[in-house]
Image (cartoon, rainbow, N blue to C red; front, side, top):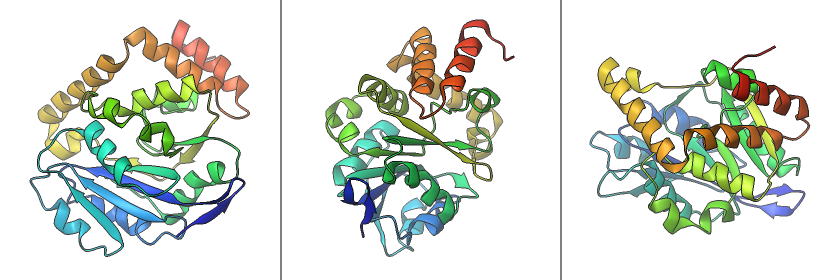
Length: 252
């Protein structure tokens, strides 16, 4: 299935990386599996030990790619991108609640209309600081051109387990790609504390943060955030606000 854009007819491949998401992934697939804008939906099962694969098989239009072992989101993402046929990629997390077909259409719209080269979601339960600056720089829900990731698959495979979003940000900045932030006020992402229990979840969150900081240093991460905001279409005011928050720690 393909759709029209200002660049002509394009195909969108939806890539979803999943590890032990059997209780949650069906809600995402109900919104994505038969969406008319999506050429294909690919789920990369990153070595799950639960019934994630069995849940995915209940959706005939979804292509399941199973990894023999759990190697982290970065490696799984590279696997999904390599399998994708579309010129555009829609990247979705597997643990979203409240996701609808309209949310998917909204995420694709700015890129299809030629208003931006990249779109990024801002979910209901994104951190307050992300709502304040108008950008969730680690959001897993994005639309990008395939070559942004397809040209560097070996580098992505070598990233820390959860480093792919900040690595992607670095490439967006290097190429000066315009960004559209798409607000999803009714969509939430499950916290690791909800999935794993409080203490295991906290440890998992800290491991994820450590992975991010292995890809970019903390000061570079702050600079990266400001640069991403400056790339937003029609958001010069947001860039000034972000500069204040990042450098002075307050919002006026």
